[in-house]
Each structure stands twice: as structure tokens, then as C-alpha cells.
Length: 264
Image (cartoon, rainbow, N blue to C red; front, side):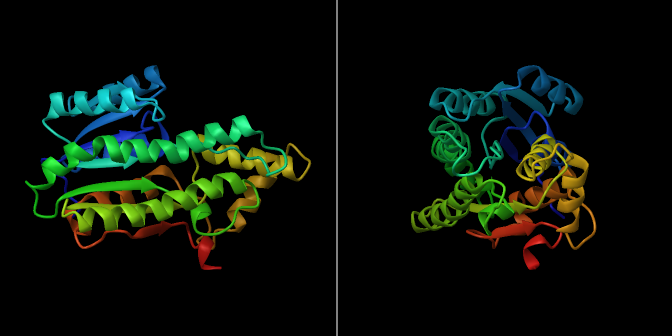
């Protein structure tokens, strides 16, 4: 189940956290993986831990030239690209009144422009490999529960992730109409224990006028009926599923992995 034998994946923002865990699980499932990130040393360390089935390439997702170079390096090393995971993202943690225009531009550049460029510039390689696979190629976009329901902590982050959610559906429909055989799905994590997850605790505490991140963590924990916060492996498993042929009849869908947060 969820096997990726012979597949090649390109994952943005994969030096650490969810992206790094996804790379690990994909290699265990039989794939070759290219990791793109701006954290060069961390990315190289991750690749060293993964072995010969992985490569690292510097990738600022807001730059066309970086995407083109990362795709070219992946194709040169592994022969093509079957899977794109648009994982890179950032969390601002500021309200509408507090956020500056420059901060919004940076947030939108990474969370929205990065997904658009990754999809557009990886598309030729994905389309070519799709012709050789029973279920075609796959794109998995990292959205969020904040792309499904409102966010008290970061309405601008919610705005970008809502955009990713609908872009996923629209891209799936466009590629189906054009006969590209590229499935496009999104995954929607709850609060995950990563560096970004820690930023949400800091923002929550700040909004309450304290520095008590432990109390903020407990509040977040209480919003997850399953009784715990998520870990990167929880989300990586979902990404591997969406990327695999097991999800061959899924496109334009959103997989919610949130410990019950949005069921309330």
C-alpha cells in the first residue's frame, strides 16, 4: 500500500519538519526525492541522512530561476518528476491591523506565489512522466485547517491557505480538461509540532498579552478532540497517500488531518 516504487518526487521546504519527514517516508516507499529549501546546510544534512536516493538543491520558491534549476537538477539526476509537493510556507501570526504591507507581500510570495510557480514550472516534467504511469503524476499542496475555517491568530495566513485550497481544485479541473493526467490534491493539517507550530504558540500568547507559550500550547491542545497535537509523521503519511496510486481516483480533493479540530 502507498508504494512509490520508481517514482521521483520534488518537495519544497523539505530541509526540516513535515517536508523532511515526507522525504523520509517517500524514500522508504521506494521513491527518489529532491529536497528544495533555502536552509542549505540543514537541507544537506537531511539528504545525508537519507542516502543516495535523495538530492538537495537550493530553492527559494518565490524565484522562477530557482524552480527551473531545481526541476532541471531533479530530471538530470533521477530522470524526471512524478510528484510535486508544494510544502514551503510561512506563518505570520499578526492581525490585520498589525501586519505591514511588506509582511503581507512576503507571506503571499511564499504561500501563494510559491505554489503557483512550483505548479507552473514543474508542469512540463510532470506531464511527460504522467504518460508512463497508470494513474498519472501527482501534485500535493500543503494547505491548512486555516484554509477551511477562519483563523483568530493570523487572518492573512488563512487568506493565503484559502487561496491554496481553491487553487488546488481549479488546477485539478484545468489539468483534467487538458488531458494532462496530473492529479492535484491538498492536505490540511491541524496544529503540528514543528518550528511553525511553535510560532503559533508564541502568537497566541502574544495576543493574550503574555509570554506563556505553555498555556498557549495547552489551549491549542484543547482544541484537538483526539487529545494530542499532530507530529510531522501524521501529515507525511497523508502526503504519501495522496502522491501514491492508492489515491488514483482522487483529484481536486482536500485531505483533512487535524485531530478533529474542524469537526467542531
